[in-house]
Image 1: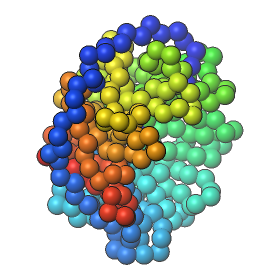
Image 2: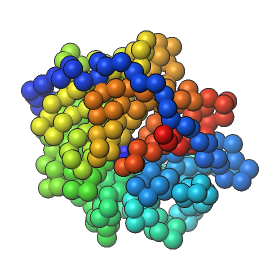
Image 3: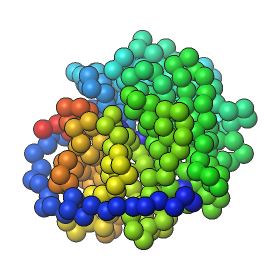
Length: 335
């Protein structure tokens, strides 16, 4: 599993986690390859059956949503009619994939691919110019956002495509959802008019709650929540400052996750039900390094820098991208 303001939140900090020494890397990175004739690929999601999704370019330079099976064979998922590019973000264990379909420079449409690869548009709000579906749970419920009048609106789609708006915090003006767990708890961001973001959680009934930020920080984002209610994301002082990876426990306790030694920050993109967290750590010159944090906060570099890890399966398999060889490729890291 894996991809804002105002309410006052009491934040409890656990400093003991994330201060332990880094572990020695024992993972192996595998280049998942590209579509025929392609040179670039990214992996955004992995399910508990080992199916990986993301995108690859092809000989014509267009990016298409792709799915890699457990044996590493890649399948082009194609686009909605009239479009020529697409991206896949998440797949559930039923083989249903969600993402976006578009023509570069034009409107984007949220899309759902069924197990056989048939694409169906997930309609957004009336007048929306951008619609994206970022995550889908085991029940077929998806989340993402619509952009109307230049403003983000978090959405939840039922399996039959019915839309529920996931509203921002009181006084905020925009929201976006990045993940939904099996219990229909979603996480994402709520935004004020000047763009400041706050990490939030939506209940199954769509009630929004602020998750808070680290002391002295004003910006935060939540990227994933597991089935135990543990959420992960980032916290920052300002939009321009380096973010720091964080974890929120179900009770709202926020814990900083330490970057690699010598690095200045990072972000946590995914957490599995065993408590393993993945994301990236950033060097002082801005190079990202894919990392994994143990449930106790021990950080391990996954390899292939520059690289980032976007999702982690229940068995600990991690996917993302690596450009260490010079070409940016979808990468699978395993122990």
